[in-house]
Length: 177
Image 1 (cartoon, rainbow, N blue to C red):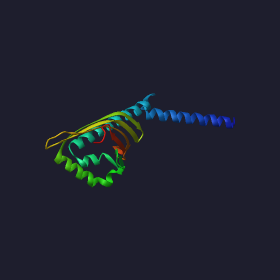
Image 2: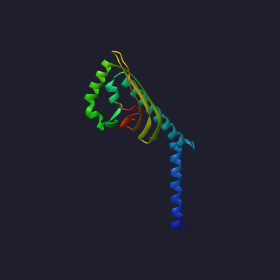
Image 3: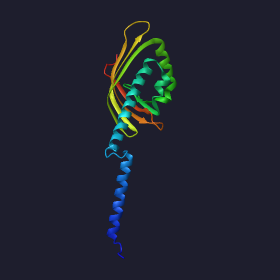
Image 4: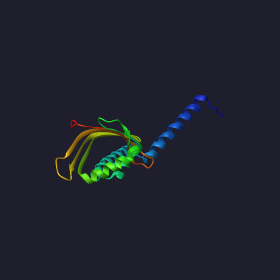
């Protein structure tokens, strides 16, 4: 009977680990040698689509003066970083935001477009940058108040799989009046 040498055991153990790893990759990718990368690519595409939808919803909520919808796009720990103002935690001032949206609904017809130029997903975090346009036209008549700007936003996927705004930095291209 032949005895096992330490080197034989190491080779056997290495082979078992390699087989186990390859089997795991095959199952993770549905048996396709490129399956894991396809799955990751599909997940990234779905995440990017979800983030584009978030920006469409954001615009729609602002246009419709829907404060609840707007607030719910944000993580409970979200911070806003506006131009020429201190940063603030969004949910800490949610009552003020609801009042501002209600007043805006009475006084303005609003138009808004958000154009994400770049969306980068890194697991449960993502960042997006782009441009936005917002015009508030007084219901009583007069010139629209126009804001044309850019943004850089960090998002986080919550435990239910929904993307939420976590940090939002934005500023206008139009000089203050």
